[in-house]
Amino acid sequence: MAVVEETPACLSVKPSWLLTQLAVHAHRLASDGFGEVGARGYHYRILAALDEFGAASQAELGRRCNMDRSDVVAAINELAEQGFVERTPDPDDRRRNIVTFTNAGHRQLRRLDRALDRVQDDLLGPLSAEDRQTLTRLLTQLLTHHQRG
Image (cartoon, rainbow, N blue to C red):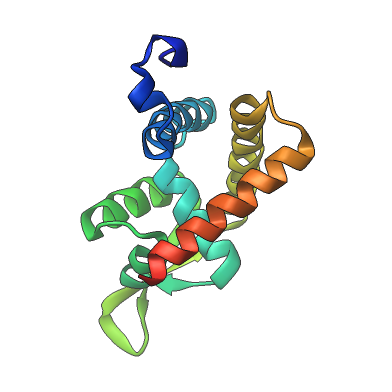
């Protein structure tokens, strides 16, 4: 990641620039962390949604995970090939598939959670536990406000 001291001062004091730079670094850390367990971020999104909300159609998963339809299909194909999810025809609408979690999928989600926890520690290492909570609260507040707008 670029050193802030090497950045023009007019940029280095702008939260939007700082957030963008940190987001790039966070994405790289997360990708590396997921890669260590043979996964991608899209896998985590889908498994987390299934864990929290239960079985869902591919379209529902796309909406919940904020993913493009083609990315959902590709990720579900990969997860199904690995035995982490199963697709079955929806009994109410045979044109739709219902995606469900398998026991192996639950175990994979736990591995991904541990990998993501390590990423958080790497990313937020310089901050105290209290500062981490404050940062998370402030980021959540900003994101919630802008999602409503």
